[in-house]
Amino acid sequence: MATREQQLDYFYRRTAEHILRVQRNVVALICSDFDVDRHALLVQARDHDRTKYEEPEFSTYVELTWMYRCQKLGEPFVPSEGFDERRHTATLHHVTHNPHHPEFYAPNPGLNPRDRDAAPAEMVDATAMTDVGLVEMCCDWVAMAQELSGSNSAHEWARKNINVRWRFTDDQVARIYETLDCLQRALENRQWSQRWTGSTQNARSSTSDACASCSTLAQSRTTPETFPSGPKRRGRKIFTKSQLGACAPIPAARAKV
Image 1 (cartoon, rainbow, N blue to C red):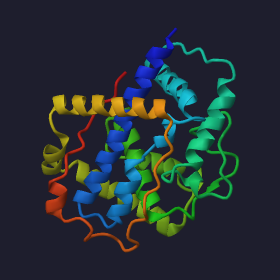
Image 2: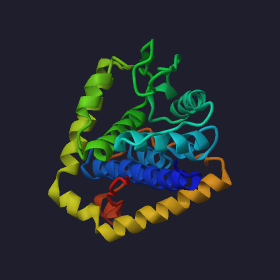
Image 3: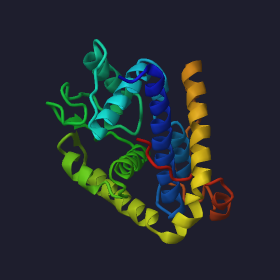
Image 4: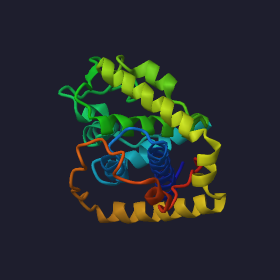
């Protein structure tokens, strides 16, 4: 049976790597001249999944992340007392407090009590989801595909869940697939990949730094900052390519098992 320290170590590493993937996907879209409010997307992605390091999510997500690890490796998992109820509470809090989840905007946020990754009894109304929220959601979906299967495509997940688990408008559906298509092309562009991936050593170093930051954040339980809203116009001119080129790259990171 795993110790709490083992679970914490895996949680920090896996969560930091997931966030790095999401942020790298955001950068890939921005560098591909994708039409989106770049300022708002960058600000929002900077705080991706931050609530996982705060209660009521933190303690439960440590155990939940370990559960998924055990399932992946075919190892036994013994949940703590009351885990199922806490898992539901923590997940509902997460999806209703993070703008890359459709439930954040829904008047009827709901979860499947038996399987948090399955459709609930009533389809969640995501029609009020913002454009930046949709784009970050797509970056999140692709980050999960990268972790679980090494693929840069989340199209299969989209087909299984759009207007099944979450209800979107026709324009939103078109925007989702446009984003997924553009992101896949950008990630598979060799020139971009060589420019932004960096060396394996740099990736490991960045992940370690991220883990240290995550640990500090979790211990401090600080309240997330409130940032000013980005420009309402779609931001092709907010950052020039020369400015983006001066930014430090966000390297890819492999999932730890």
